[in-house]
Image (cartoon, rainbow, N blue to C red; front, top):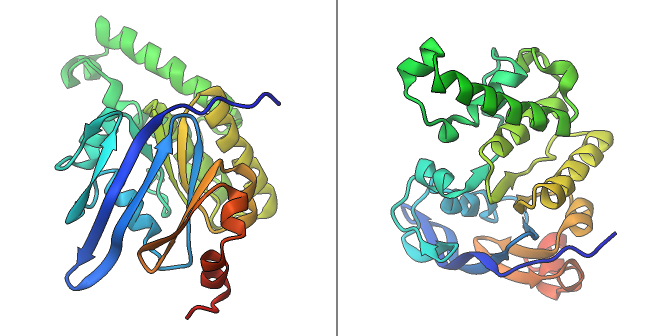
Length: 261
């Protein structure tokens, strides 16, 4: 397999601290993400991983620090603005529309890309109709890519969990993000479903050229697919480097084996 080309820093997280009341969720966290890499964030439960993703995609506003995406710092952006800039996200707890079909769920990810006004969309006339056809073609390509053609018209709530996770990934891909944040994409999956999801994450990174930032508990998965790994523990950064460097880091070993607490 050809070695992929990892580019310059696309996302730079500097000195982020986040508190809720008196509770510190994150303390002085800095790391960066390079274009086209798979960057994992790992750590025991309660380490602050999801809080970190929520800062990156504008759900939380850190009290200290800065986040820069493609050279543009975003201090006061909400999640919609961050998505418009090109950062997509999947969630740990599926936020899918359970009564809607797979196709319509993934189409909902195209909303940011739709230019025509609501009335024209409703009437499906002229440019709105042409635009919808174009968006549908894009969504159909994602459905083919994720191998869920057989379920296009199925209400998402009727699908097994592993396939629902795939639909969630598809909806995020429909936004055409430059950076995709994946919050435990393999949680609750059996071995076969995990293998499938690993393959899709690698393919998204490879074929779409999407930069991936991933939170995952399965260390085997992380070490297999990540280019670099940042490790959090109790809201502090305790390791950062290649999978091998992190695997041999004493602080990381003790955090995971519980010898430091």
